Each structure stands twice: as C-alpha cells, then as structure tokens.
Length: 238
Image (cartoon, rainbow, N blue to C red; front, side):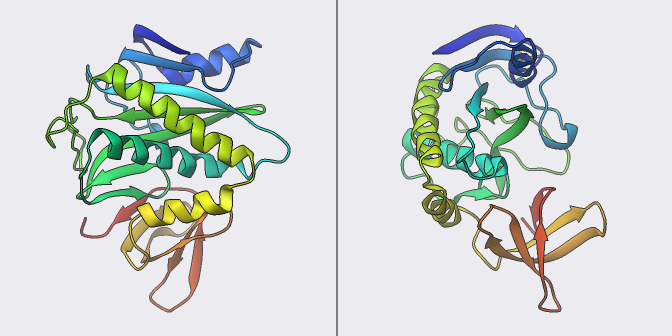
C-alpha cells in the first residue's frame, strides 16, 4: 500500500488534493516521492528534496472517540523513533523534540507535518537517510553520516509498519500509554528551551513535560507554568 512517484510538488499537498476531490484514502496507504519540488515543513519551511531521503505522507481517519488530533504529531514521532532505532541499533542521544522533530545529538534527523482536511489528517514525514540538507541556524544529520545507511524503500516499509501499530493503539484508547512512551524518548524534563509565542514573543523556560492532550508545558523563571499550544521548541544551547 505504498505508492512511489519519481517527482511531485509535495506528498502532503497531493493527498490533501485527493481528499478535496472526495477520494477515499485508506489508513495504511502511503505516497512516497523520490523528489519533491515544493516540499514544506512547519511554518512554511522548505522540506529538503535530497534524493535517497524518505519523503512521504499518509492519512489518519478521525473517529469520534479519538484523542485530540494534535496528539498525532507525537504518535508519528514515536513511529519514526522506533524505525530509526530498528535501522540504526545502538544509536545514542536520539531524542524527540516537541512537537515534531527527531534529533540526534541536537542535530535534526527527521520532521513531521500534520495538515487536516475535514475528518482526515494528512501526516507528512521527512527523514534524512542519505543526505543532510544545509538549513540556516539549524544543525542537521543523516543516518548515512552516522554510519547507518538505509535504503529508502526498506525504511518506507518499516515505517509503515511502525505507524500502523501506534495508530491502531491511538484509535483503541491507548493515548495515555503512548504519551508516557513519548516522554521517555523526548528531551528530558528540565531541559532549557525557548519558543516563539505569537502573543508574547520569545519565551524561555524549563521543559516540564506535556499535558494530557500533548500540549507542551514550560516552567518559567518565576516558577509559573505556561502551556505552549503552537510553535516549535528550541533547545537552548543545543
């Protein structure tokens, strides 16, 4: 159920267009591209089209009994973390960063982008398998550079299996357990972070975990707690 195309503007955009035309996209179906000409990440960032990297999207169909859709970013992070550990056994300092990045020793290895259409969420995932793009003000790394070269199609099959496993658990009411698993794989509580808050500018504090809905919590210098619903956390000094 993995459809591969040589070149496309964006796998996320393509699936959103199909949903907009009323097409039914079953869970477990993936669209994977060799190259993207207009890939994107969160906040309009460019999503590298490096050949040999994984660039793909899938769909989660929302049900009335599901947790909040925003938690799917964290669930997807668990799937990516799991498959990276499978492809690169023994890889150390591999941590999830709220809400959508996978870092190795502080350098970005993978990113996730969620976009919603009606009762469907398109989940886009990019992983640097063979090529680490140059990104301004952000360190990047690839599995190949870390000594764990992995073929794109092998990675795709393994990721699809990991994603299906965690998505099934999410649908079946296991979000509390998945939340705890995410915390065990994330930057530790107490890590100094900053976030650009649309209302208050840049806010810095200590990461204090995530709440029951997957919202990031920051403990500020005055001891108060602030919930971060949107934006990207940056590790201070990382």
